[in-house]
Image (tube, rainbow, N blue to C red):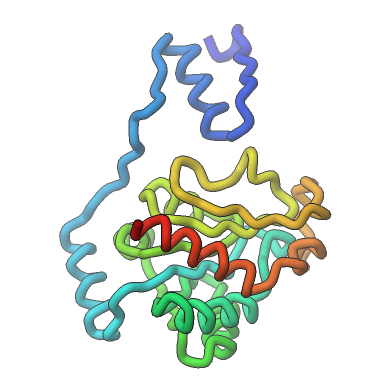
Length: 216
């Protein structure tokens, strides 16, 4: 079937595009069926113990890394965001640090002035950590999509990729993208120039708005 038949999707988001393929094969719609991620009791308990040992209550997850530099909002702005989040929302920020991202996480901590703390996890631990977060802030990355699957509010910061196609799916979210950003998927080492027009106060305004809607 996959070699003899084409499916033409009119959907914008890549998730809906893939669901249209499922509909073509099964003749059934999967709309409204929530995605489920594994819940490992040992990992859940381990993360809870780790947060308790760090004296962390309510927290946001900041994700400064990205697949390539053009999608990466500057680390120091994540640090500024952490400071403002602590002042305006009383949230501690945990900085998700993947392999090779230690320098980014360190820069966030340095700029945050004590309002952020780096944390390194396995994938299953990241699922558990994200599941209990109040908020996620990051760019077009795997951890951002993970937060969306887990129905965690997301502030997404976009540059050279199209949020209509790749934005957070199925969760409460605010997508910030400067009007001058062009969908180029350019894999340049430095951040998209228009992305630099987005400042930490704008990100925190969006975060506070989402948190207010969540608590209402």
